[in-house]
Image 1: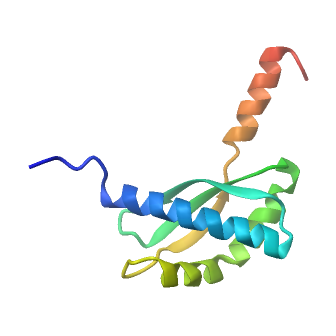
Image 2 (image 1 turned 180 degrees about the vertical axis):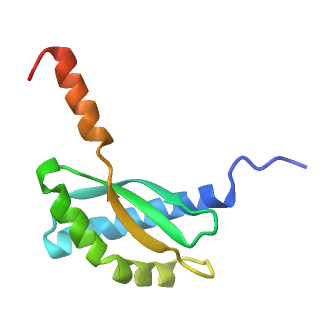
Length: 114
């Protein structure tokens, strides 16, 4: 019997990353939000909560964008329930992923810039 390389939570996270990414992109355009993109999705073991990590094109506008996405979470979850084939769509929690910002800061320090 072949071993499965991906667990169910990995498959659900990948599907959510793809779908929420397109929904966030559409929401950014429709509601004139700061430019945001989905960088990662982590699902809890019981699939009740999905933590969605987003990055912003302009880091100073990130808090505004994350706040708007948190306000839209229920509507996004409702849209997902119509698209996905799962019994229960997890609750969506948005968090800002500052790893890109930290990486750029480290790179600029290595180059000798301030």
